Amino acid sequence: MREDDHVTPSSAASALMDAPRRRVGEIDFTVLPLAEAVDGVIAASENVAVLGRPGLAVHFCNAYNVALAHSDRSYADRLANADVVFSDGVPITWVGRRAYPDLAEQWERVYGPDVMRGVFAATTAPKHYLLGGSPETLERLQARLRDEYPGAQIVGAESPPFRSASYDELQQRDQRIRDSGATIVWVGLGTPKQDAEVQRLAASLPVVAMAVGAAFDFLAGTKAQAPVWMQRSGTEWAFRLASEPKRLGRRYVWGNSVFAAEAVRTVRSSQS
Image 1 (cartoon, rainbow, N blue to C red):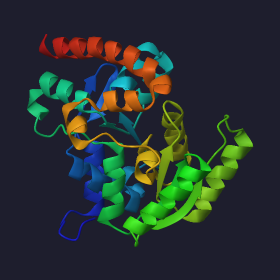
Image 2: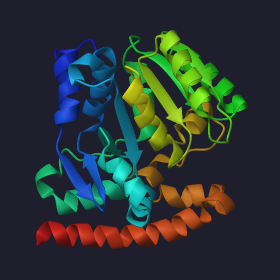
Image 3: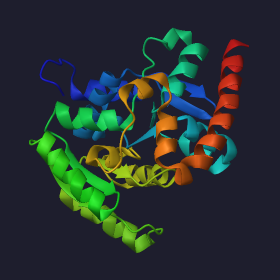
Image 4: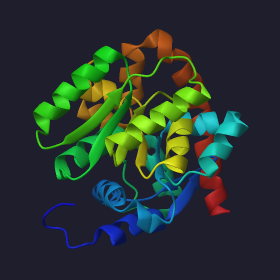
């Protein structure tokens, strides 16, 4: 927690779980300002026991996730059982504020990379474990984090193989995380794989498991992040599409059209 905060870890962690949730498409989003989200994650990592569960799974969802949940019932069901789902994209906040005006002031973008920076900057208490990315990205990420946040405790890091892990491999992974003493596991495995992994980790370990996607690449500097004005204007997707057209082309062409329909449905449903 920040030095000027007077909120106990248990109350901040509870506030994270008790925050209002509202549906956009098929996903129920946790509505909190960014600063409160960061504080809640830190508090939960310091006192997971107060939440009454082994661990806590935190997801960051944007327009593509909403589109995916619309077309993939199993993915929608997974997120329906999520502990926390933050609004990772500006378009989510636009729809949320329009559909639920009573929460407009609280509904901010809670972006994975921003939360990761905020948690690392706010305190040296959490013990961090990094799971995902290529070996080269992971090495650069650790170096940058240690340089920018010298007091941070990075207690482990691993780049798992691209293929699906076996049961034994997952058990060995869990044991490595357990032995490290980690309280936060940052997971950058891509959607939807990382969403399944944070729920699996939170079900078996006393950690806050965070599905932060491209945050590893952005914080490591291996991929360029969109300018701030594009992030704020909701056009970040265009920057990423221009950067990786082959990989992200279908995602944005298909995903944006499905999200637009889901956005209209959400607003209409809230007003009926």
